[in-house]
Image 1 (cartoon, rainbow, N blue to C red):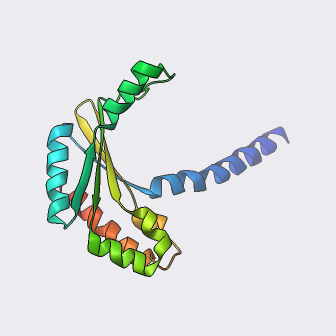
Image 2: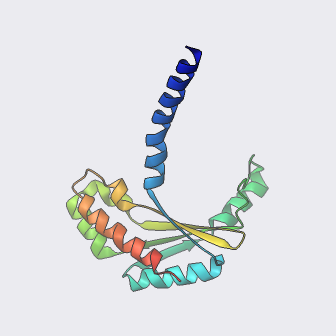
Length: 158
C-alpha cells in the first residue's frame, strides 16, 4: 500500500511539473556556439541586419549587474559563473506595423531582443519566441513569421 501511494504521488508530481517545464523551455529559442562574446555579437548583429532588422541598442547587462552588486552587495551574485551577459535590442518597422495591425496589444513584443551569455568560451544566444507570446491572438501568424526570421538570423550567425 505504501509503495503504491508513493508511486501515485511521484506520478502526480511528475505530471504537474511537466507542463511548466515544457512551457518554459518552448518559449525560448536557444543556440550555443563555441566562440567568445565579441565575435558572436558582431556576427549576430551582421546577421540581424542582413535579415532586415535595425539594431536599436546593445547593452552590457553583465557589467551593469556587476556594478550594482558592488554597490548593493546583494546575495547569490552570478551563481552560474557567467563571464559575460549582453543583449541586442532590434526591430523591423514593417513587421512591427503588421503585428500591431493584427492586434495592437501585441505591440508589447517589440522591440525584439536577444540575450547572449558566455561561460568557458561558449556563448549562448537566447530569444523569447514572438509566436509563443502571441499564441491564440489575432497576431499569431505575424508573430510566427517574425519568430521565423529572428531564428533564421540566429542560425545564420557564424
